[in-house]
Image (cartoon, rainbow, N blue to C red; front, side, top):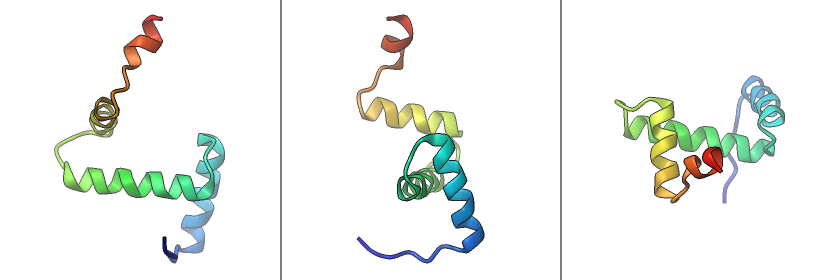
Length: 68
């Protein structure tokens, strides 16, 4: 684990987003970093496609929740 310097304005946006997404500030920052890394590694995929791909990798079937 390390320390990452984050601009004050960005930190404020992370704080606001973390409230909406019901995550800690650190969890929100980590989420955005992971999504950014995945987007750079998969430049042809949309955000939704990236999320769906990660859900499948985690063996999560959203259809079970919707259909159930």
